[in-house]
Length: 114
Length: 115
Image 1: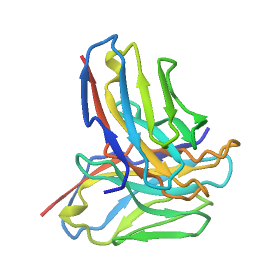
Image 2: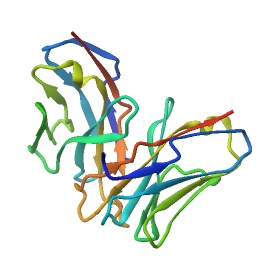
Image 3: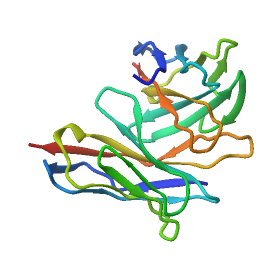
């Protein structure tokens, strides 16, 4: 158990819909990273928040957004969903004090868009 | 930009066989290098890491050495077990100007170990 929790575990929805994925980091970790894992693109970094503020953006679509709340949990919002958004979405948390700090991954949310 | 290339699987080995999974990287600076493992139905777990040239990371019988001259970080294990069956990801982290340490991953190598 990494100490990072993600809900829901599975999500099935239709094209055009909007969903919210939730992540609670390990106690004490200020940084939350979101990654998308798909068969064709592999594991890709989407976005990072540190102590409530956006710190870096990767290959995140404009239809996607995220935020981190004062209690440090984070939500990833995916809107106008397309079939190609079906993937595993992971969050990871870290202290981020150095470049070699471990990122601890949650179990993921599997999104299926029908 | 940064990139990681690792041998694509699947790789199937018999128990007690020697394992090598090749990984090479491209980076602008001096990245930290990682191997993560993903067991079926689970998230990723850090297997080992190395933070500078010639560092050797090791854990659970797995080893990898940071080779700057060949920009490589190959994963090895002398004798694999059925329980090592998983997907292995090579990754690097290079701090951005904003102090972000996002991971850049290879495509993953699926290892199956048969008794």
